[in-house]
Each structure stands twice: as structure tokens, then as C-alpha cells.
Image (cartoon, rainbow, N blue to C red; front, side):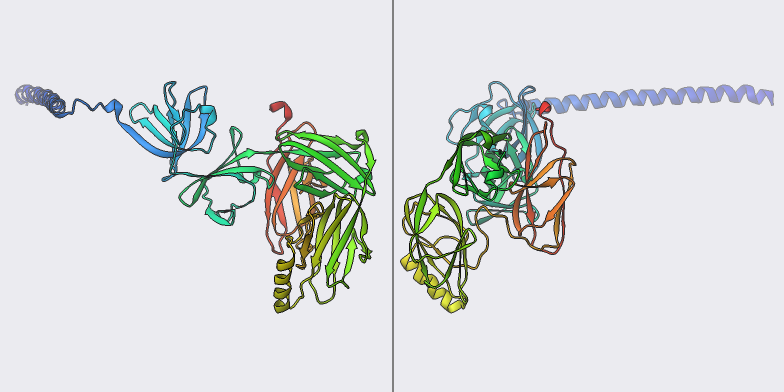
Length: 473
């Protein structure tokens, strides 16, 4: 047995050593062959490569929207308009930035949301050129619009455009949300094809706050030519940024003040420090068809056989007659003598059409609820049955349905400029459509949001982001 072991063990050892030797020789051979093949491939590539092409100079071009810029790091973020893909590129000091017509621009002149033709190096991700795309379209000075995020559409000047979820809102140098856009803002809208890519708030809004205004409650406030509202307690009115002449009238007296509205800031008009003057009287001749209709001025039945003495300023006019559609509108009296023509339409469809055509032939018809300015001779209105008037509280959907504002707590809540209470708060649900909710709190930046109210029998519950401290700005 011992003799067998003496023979077998050395044989086994020799076999193992031989096998290991063969294994390492094979591995070394494979390595040498791999290196040889790699060298052959490299040599083949070098021999067949076009000397004019450098992989470091391969260029990619894309039409994309600028969605972020960090000037300190020199990096810009883009989203391709065709594939909605995000990518980041490095801006070099020598990178040309061009307008649509090839004019030179700076990065500061390129707002977030701009659509650009982007050219960059695939290898280094370095921007080679930027130019405002001539394939994109732009609407400027947009003030008449409707945004419906839920349905994914935006209406501009009677046309409807697709509003994808990737569309952005640019407010200054920051991205915002569509709720941040109010109906007093002026927009630039950029798109590609039939879809909107970005909404840029070119002219934002600030606020007019009235203090010591108890004498003028129930009267009217005019901010410039376009904003006219009934004065209520503790008003906070969103106003486009800019310079305005503000006028308040009530009970034969007027107060006037010039103000400068700064974006996102409140301008306080302290009426205890403003001169209050007695207003002049205008004499208005109402020509109403039929002439036996009833006329109400500021809720008081008024005989209009002769000129009606009315104080300068804004007044509410209501005309009614059984069998006809009533007229509700506001008028601005600003001349010593003025004429207002009104034609009521019969309630039957056929007669209504005839009356409407007659009115168009003989007068200039005013839109329902539109402010009629007596400084324009021959101002006219036709009956429409509407009770909505410029500057008054909006009609409600239901007295039993409410809007609940739950957060942030402890802030003042205003709806369309009118104070409704401190959050958490509830108030009667207004008419269907867009409305502006404004939040205000001492020491914090005032903030407005546009909400969409549906014409249904449901309550509406709202919660908003926490307000930003003025010290953080």
C-alpha cells in the first residue's frame, strides 16, 4: 500500500502542475491575440477614417425651449420641443447668441421659455450656437386669454391651442405655474405647430390697497381706464404694473391720486390724506326704445323725459319692461351734456332678431354689461337679459355651494379684489369662469392665483403654497 502511494502521489502532483502550466499558457496566448486584434482594428480605423472628421467635433442640432439657466456655472437647461426631453449644456464665453434675424444678443435678453435652435458638441456638451428659432411662433401683448389646464387648452383671440403638461410659465427669471397668471397680466405666448410651449409674463401685476375708505364704500374706484370696481371694505385690487390715475367717487364727492404699481408689491392709498372734492354734475339725455320702459339709476327709478342730472363718475343703469330683455350696464359720466341711446329687445326670438338688427342700423351697440362712457356722443346699448355689469360682485352659481380656502392659515383672502375673510374661510361660490384669489399677510409677499370655477352643484376646496417672507426676497 505504501509503495502504491509513493508512485501515485508524485504522478498526481505532476499532472496538476502540467494542467496549471497549460492554463496560464493559454490565457497568455488569448491576451496576446486580443491585443493583436485590437491593434489591427485600430490600424484599420486609422487607415479608413476621413482626416477631416474629429469625433470631438461631432455636432448635434435641436429645436428646444430654454427652461433653466445658471449663469454662475455657465450651464443652461433645455427641453426639446418635438420629444419633450430635458438636457443640459455648457455655455462658453465665445458661444454666439443670435436673434431670429441673425442679430447678436446677450443671455440676459433670452427669457426662460424662449424657443431656440441649439447647436452643440456631442463629445463635450458645449454649446456651439444659440439662435431664436424661426419655426416657432410668438403672440405678444396678449391680454385676452383663457387658460384651462384641466382640459389642456388655451384660447387666444378666438383660437384654441393645445396646452401640454410640459408647457411652462416664465415669471421674470423664475418658473411659475399657470395659477400664477392673472387676467390683468400681459403675456407673450410661444409655440410650435399647434401646441403652446411657454407663457411668458411680460407685464405682471401689483396691488392697490385702500385705507380709511369708509366714506367711499358703495361708490366706485377707477384705476386708469380699464379697472372699475364697486368700493367695498378693505379692498385689495390686482393692477397691471405701471403708472395710473386713480379716482374714487361717491355721494357727490371724488378723491384722486396718481400711483405707481410695482410688480408683486402693494401700493396703499390712504384716503384720509387725499383731498376730497365735490364733483361736477352732468346732464344726460336717455333715449330709450320703447320710451315707456322704466329707468333705474343706481337703483332709483328715474324719469327720463328730460335730461337727468347725474354726478360725474360711474353709475349703474338698469332698464326694464315686461316682454323685453332688460339692460344692466354701468355708465361713466364725464361731460356736462351727454346722450345715451338704449334699445330693448323683445323676448321672442324672431322679434329679438328684428330689434337687434334695427339697433345695429341706427346706433352703435354696446356689449352686455360693458361700461358706457358718455364722453362718446351717441353711446348706445341693446337689451340682452344679462345682470352682469363691470365692476360689480359676480353672480353666484348657487347660494348653497361654497368655496373653501383652507391654507395657508391666518392670511387675508380676497376674491376679485374684495375681502372675504381670514383663512381658513368659506364664501359663496361665484359664477362659473376664471376668478382671482389674492392672499395677503403682513411681512409676507402678496400673492394672487387664478382659479377656475365650474358650473356645477359642488363645493370648491382650495389650498395654496405657504407665503414667502419679505425677508427671504
